[in-house]
Image (cartoon, rainbow, N blue to C red; front, side, top):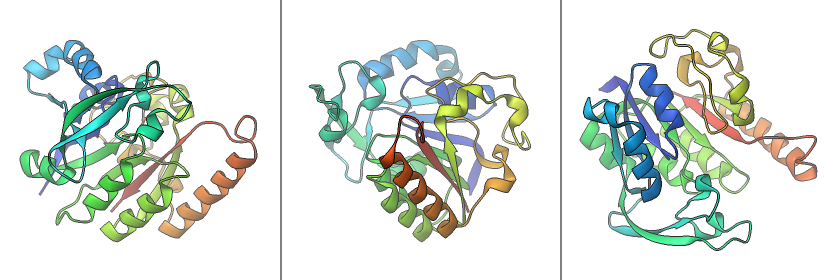
Amino acid sequence: MIKTNLIFDLGFHNGDDSDFYLKKGFKVVAVEANPELISNGMERFQKDIDKKRLIIINKAVSNNLGRVNFYIHPTKSDWGSCDQGMAESDGSKSKTVSVETISLIDLCKEFGIPRYVKVDIEGCDAMVAKQLSSLENKPQFVSFEISKQNYKEIFSWLNVAGYKKFQLVNQLNNPDRKPEEAQTVTEGKKIDYQFTKYSSGFFGNDLPNDKWLSYKEALTRYEKYKELKIIDNKELVLGWLDLHASL
């Protein structure tokens, strides 16, 4: 049974996405591996935590229970990853911390099946898409930040998991999106909200209905985007994409 008032925020970062979901009236379970970001989030959202509207878990999402190394970029807090190469992709030396792990499956067992799962865990997103296929009951909506390194796996596992509709959203545009742009404003309460550059933005039924694509259509469109980005990512193709999917 899906809990229609529940959202999982996997890759909490600075909490901007959780802030949006909370203001929309949802209960949020957030997972973040970086202990510094956890500390900041606990302070920022103390009232929501006290009211049990927000649960923040200091763990890394993984396939295996135990501990893993998590690599923190010295200046870019959104580049933290369990993949050292990802965290150090600009040549910077990362800081290593050891963190406990948790899987999407365990989260669902403990808290229930959410309406929506947002995934942005820097290079490790594909394993969450794979874990979705193991769930008997699945979230109605999911989103993943995708890249040329992981998009094939994410598309493939979402298809295996039974997701039928797909939509590509450029996160670069989110700060310019206004609440009235939402297709229906059926996802939670209608609010006046300003997205930040770190926001994942609208989700679910609040995305434009006419932009949902089939699996093959969305995959083809992303591959065209990827090819153009390789040619020129400064002028022709800006930003980065989230892949939204619906059952």
